[in-house]
Length: 285
Length: 335
Image 1: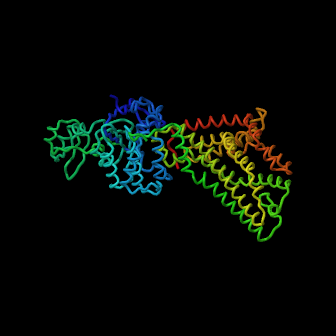
Image 2: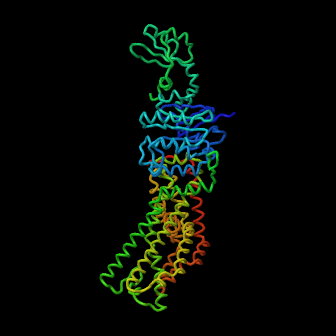
Image 3: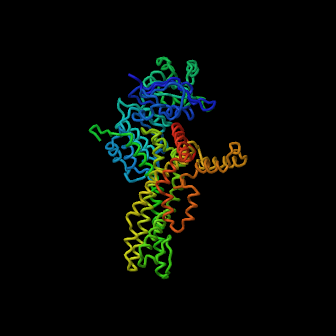
């Protein structure tokens, strides 16, 4: 059984700066992977390489295909939503369905129409007449009607209100995702999707700094709320990160025995957002 | 659609959908522009006829057709002469549509591989299983076949409208002009000629199409400046140093065969040489025959044999291939 995405030593340079600096990772089938990193960390470059939209050095195989040389074949099995604004504004909804149905062998018009029937979108409307939220509904309906193996989402809900954002991920989970499918998603609204992720990939300055399943994350990382009298003992265990709240200190630990930590104070499972802040410390400094 | 709900897709089918997509996006330029021009011109013709009626001007001339001829009985000789004049009128009347076609296709090609990068919708098209080669060739076909086909239909609509107006005018004066205005052989021959001209013009236009698509694919901003300024600056430079003297050629050669072919070959029938156009001046007794000769199949076939034509086609193909190659990895642009 082969991985959906297999990257080894992926490198991409723009002049002197490396957008990707020898990145290796593997994505298995049936996972929902969050690719998370600060602005300019190389997320988009990595996605572009996977989609065959950019040249790169190193080895990369997506669904067993080379994204550079077998792009057309690859795109029968891969869908992506780059962000909300990329549907052409002149296109009519009906034309979009006709066109995708005309060129995509795995598109089901029936399914797309069913999904659109739940929205206020009319076939005669042009994309420019739709609100940002409706455009993303349309794009999602088109993509969900395609029976693809890998779905790539790059900030799919940027600039949408919370109702559309919730609906987006709910629809995706309840009507699309199954163990045959794999989703790779980047977003800055990490709190909203952490409960649906199965895997995390943190990327910082072109390197992978964390590659773990969500279960691993729960095992490895722990957050402890410590009273001032025990703070020095906690610091001795080399926390990843420390912050103050209500006169107490909150420490984030990686790989320290939980029973030992429990002696210092109250234990929590850290949120992905906290983990992210701790891992990316010093990025913009 | 079969039982599994999946579609059967053929490469030809994909290509045709992409051509259709170009038409959807550019309906205004491809379809409505020639039709609106035809409608406006017919309105002017109708106004001219009405004014002629009101002022009772005996010798009113409409695109080379004298209205008083229509209002009188003609002998065989006069009918032949009228039909010759009519052919010229019907063809030359299409000139505004031809000029508009040039402008529409020029800017279409310039934006074809740039606009979707500027508004990022290229990412949507690239999310579908479409090859860049097919996408670019669909754009070439849309600009060089579909747009000229609609222009030809616009011209035919204009010609039919013109003939209807003239017939009505003649009928108003109690003359049945149908036999000599509506000669099927003349009309069908002319329309066949219009259809044949489409692929001939398309091949001639390949260097301009290739150059514009190349700039459209290459430019990160302002493709117009790249496309227009680069050849013109090169021409100025060549003129300035008379570089071509080294090859025993005049800089006029560069302007005509490099700059001109890169920018102006989209002008319909621009493969007609100036000298053959000058011959028209000396054929004033029968301009219909002269135009007929100029656009004769023999003259068209001669074009295919000229190095100017063939080298242009080769250059166009090379530039289109380069545009396709650039299209593979250029997805960004600054609007």
